[in-house]
Amino acid sequence: MTDKQLILVVDDDPDLVESISMKLESQNYRVDKAYDGVEAFAHIQNEKPDLVILDVMMPRKNGYQLCDELKKSGNYSDIVIVLLTAVADAVASTNYTHLDGKSTLADDYIPKPIDLDNLMQIVHDHLE
Amino acid sequence: MKLPIDGLKIYNSLALIFLRNDLCAHIREAFHRLARQRINVNMLTLTATGGRWVGAGCISLCDLDRARAVLPESVRQSDIIYPVGMLTVFPHKSRTRLFFQLISAFYERRLALYATASATSTLSFIMDGHRLEQAAQLVQTIAELPSHHTPFTSRLHVRQL
Image (cartoon, rainbow over all chains, first blue to last red):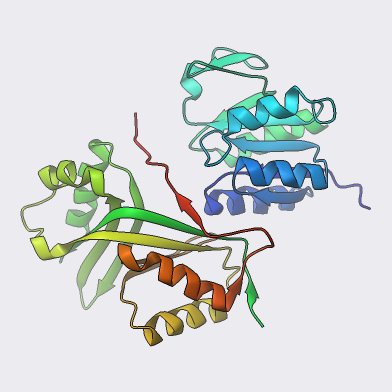
């Protein structure tokens, strides 16, 4: 076992997953990777992460669906979820917002294109 | 022994546009025109050979008519290849062995590649759309996906708002 906190990065763009992962690892976090919502849920069942960085638009199961599933579950509702969204301008507030007509229980969000330093600060603030 | 990879993605129904000019600025301007039309470019490469610049950009086939309307007149019919597809293998982890094995396998099967590109994590190969499935099977003779993983066909079309 390790004391390092585990972060799951979920996006169907492998280059973005890799970029975020490298930055997180440089900040001394452990990183797990998944490329769609279904795969992400399987990873979460295998090892529960402390935080999930979650893209919205993904195949098979999108970010909204996975976020709702986790936050409404008994076992995983305490996992911090940071949504990556290209429609951040439509977000009025966090923690319970309407994005594109859908509700999400995400703890935070970050707009695309991503500012990695901003993302690191958000991750750090939630996990400290 | 097969090389481990995390994923294999297939993108269908694309068009590949070649832009050739002695000045890089002209190619940049052409791609800016596509951007102003909010046409998503899935892959972009820029090559300089003998003082001549060649830009290659992949767009969704359904955006082709809009793209033609704003591309420079110097772009000829032969500079646009369609329908093509893109096969993306990831992560490459800077393994040149993976790249060379894939290139060799495609060559041995006479599988034409119109463009290749590498990025932070991915290796991308542009080829005829109808040969994507064959190429994906070929990749799996060289590289091994995680258990329960299969090649994933992207059905998302990114339309910029």
